[in-house]
Figure 1 (tube, rainbow over the protein chains, first blue to last red):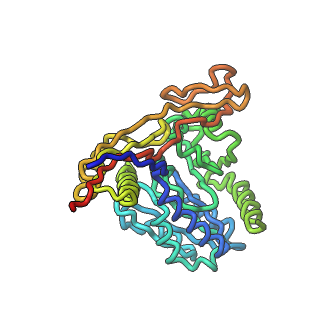
Figure 2: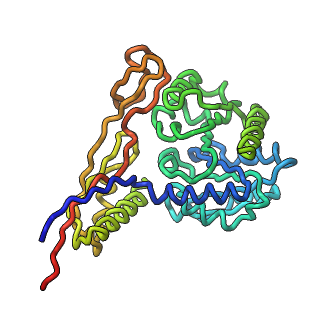
Length: 223
Length: 119
């Protein structure tokens, strides 16, 4: 018997990343701009999606993929209720969506009709950050009641973002949230990150976000 | 808590490379994990023992090499080791930082046994 050392040097997330690339090709071919929307449970992901749909529905067909750990269709039902196609992916207890799960979800949607696809990841600030899905942008919905220390506690999720939404700004008068401390944490992880402070309750800030999104979608289409 | 998926991936990569090397058994797996990748060694080990059973990797020892996170300051161009918590550049106080090291998460090598076929 002989013992040999075999050089490997292979990224552990390689298999996921390869499927993510396939997802991106599928989305590009269909002309669907896609967002991986992440947040902790209760940050207002579904409310934010509904507000975004409301603002853009005149101009775009919007599809939603709902990632949930349990077969509860509360979120998907809300999207269907406003007349947009939604599919639910049950992760079977897994704490995140991965590229393979999204690939299966994409097959259930009328992609060529869809201009904007929002993928609502599982509510969790740790695991989704490790799995590239192949979407065009990563977006995090943070919210005021979660506290201002979240960038310090969950650095990885902030590092991979293209857009940060700070939701529930209507609660600022009632909560000790130091915006400067929060934003300094974000700056250390992702300098110059595009950030929108919004309230899905009052609608404040939603227009600035959707204006940015319209431009971003147009820029992607021209490439 | 995504160590289950990660462990599956480790098994797949190690098995594939072992088969390519015509190995009869994998004895050791060397992994490099940066401080910033949120992987818990103990959880991976826990899943590993169950998952590797009845594969080429059964009984293989996992070795974790941890890499200290280092930040690069975009203002003074200095580098510093990241303590447990995020902090501004100790030299100039800037918040404009990028990660220089600590993101790693890969399999470096494996040790395999080859049993020559009986004549």
